[in-house]
Image (cartoon, rainbow, N blue to C red; front, side, top):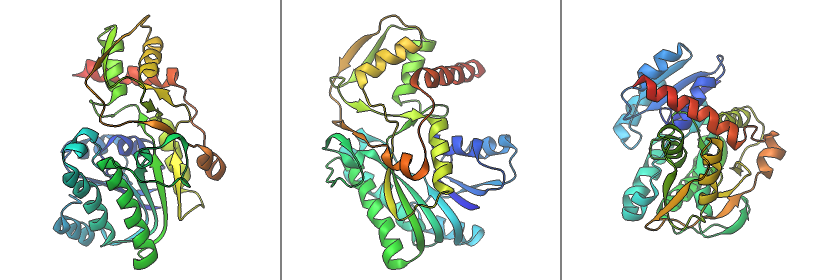
Length: 312
């Protein structure tokens, strides 16, 4: 497989590269992370080639295609700016950050199979279980930009014919090694498991739902999707165990051996999540079910963060 991975220096991208089959030839795009080539070199995987490219810059994308070509067997599009509060403050900036790179890349390449990682946030406003057949009309700027990108993927498939097959994956999130420091699972483990505090602050009233899977499961899902035979569809990729934020805090505390966690509620949340994603598509099309439960995932992630902290 000749695979182009955008956003390769991010959380899911790094974990995918760690476990990618040796027979996949991967060009791993990154932009601002200057230490990413060092990470790739440490993998000792000659089938993975890091390539710096600012997808928001048309000249950068042109230079990339001149060096690495325009024809690809597969493209896994993971790039994106995920910052909900910023998207609310700067909706124009969010739109440009999340749609311009998609347009710049797809305008210049031809790809047989494109997997575009969208977000479960596109279901903004719904209540209860949601699936790809549910009409969506989000008002959250980040969700709007991801939904717009979904439509552009279909444009390049149906009108430009430069994307032979596509799969839109509405991802509900994962946690684990290389997760961003500001993400809730990292903060929870550092606060409760490493600093051994017994209190944790949250935004909002704690009723927002979260349904993330351990990253090893997410990588397995990606492998099945890329090797699968189901295309020109929109699917969910969700953990199947939605929890309220306050319930998650207590569950992580229990997994880390914290007897009782006091939750401090600060300010308000920038989004209202009262929905969770269906898991039927992944089960029926790709025979995929997450296999790592929360307690095991938290234990693995805690061990990683403890090693990382000790190495500093």
